[in-house]
Amino acid sequence: MELTAEEREWLDGGGGPALKRAMEIVVALGTIYGAPHMIPVESVQISGVSYRNIGDAGLRFLRQWADEGAQVRVPTTLNPTAMDMVRWEAQGFSPDFADKQRQVVDAFARMGVGEGVPLPTCTPYLIGNRPSLGAHVAWAESSAVAFANSVLGARTNREGGPGAIAAALTGRTGAYGLHLTENRAATLRVEVRAKPEAISDYSALGAIVGRQAGQAVPFLAGLPLDARDPLGEEKLKALGAAMAATGAVGLFHVEGVTPEARATVMLAPEHDTIVISDLAPGYADLSDDIDAIDLVWIGCPHASLREVVLVAEALRGRTVRVPLWVTCARPVRAIAAEQGYVAVIEAAGGRVFVDACMGIAPVRDLGFSAVATPSAKGAYYLRNLAHVAARFATLHACVDMAVTGDRG
Ligand code: F3S
Image (cartoon, rainbow, N blue to C red; front, side):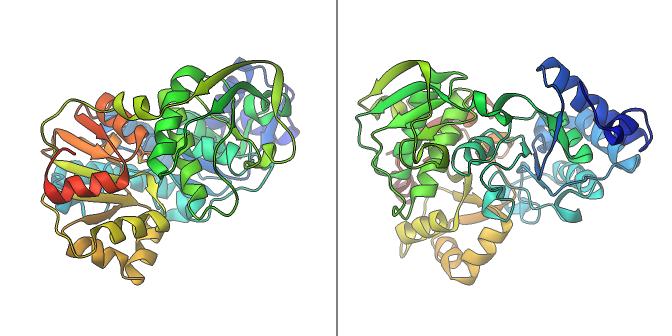
């Protein structure tokens, strides 16, 4: 691989042991994937933050970087943790778990992530880390990767945890995969004959497409979406998150909507075609046969301000029987609180937590075994990572379940 003089010097240890190790990682990854050279990245988003997932071994690994003085070279944001970093007691976490989770975030903070004050979220594009069309970035969270590539037209592969840290410390990633124009054409045409309306309908659609797409780049035609849709961004966020969860989709195009499919049809000459006429299987495949639910979780990916407003409007004047938790980025909650929406939700008995993701939390240890969510990715993670039963339904159905206590 061709390296600049500066990159060569870092690789030879001229920038210290942490930078040398980071350079070794990005060069090894680039070599595996056939990158001819490195590309500077404008921002990095790091995953692998939940103490439940990384454990003591992961914490030691992070501490070692931080102790060696590793410092990020480009703006870097952090994926969610397992818990609300301030209100973890209200979620039922033990002090021991909270202490370990705090040490994980502290290690990232010492490396300069979030300019020393990380705001954990899987929607960095809602809180200022929003790359522009054509920008090269190195992001790790799969739903954010799909959003950055597809909705913003930025360019990123799906980085692994250590790969993203190495990219943050070097400001580099290999020139391969979705960084290259030739790999961004669609390889699967999806004719959508179903009529998705609610945000969760787009999530159900994404779950169906993801299962059939695998690693393909889907081009979706026939979606009733246009630039004037006030919830258009939320629908695309849900669509991409689901395709990245049930499949390995890192980039998709929507005819006439996403930036690389507005003027031209980004379709490779050799491509498959599938037709989606019914969204019901998308909901059914991610819903277990359960009698009752004991938690409703909304905010996967982390809720936008508009989604918090939707929950508040659905809950206004009602009272929940089953805990209802909304998860979002800390700045989103701050704005929603200022505008009175958090008060509406919490007056109804719901809670708006920040930093946290229930998909990577020890949900069973918190006392829950059956969770309803309007997110296909949420349901997928609840089942496969948190090992609880899931019910995937529209946001309004989920709110109703929380109010009535029924399974919907
Ligand atoms: Fe975000 Fe967790 Fe969902 S990281 S996309 S809230 S599973």
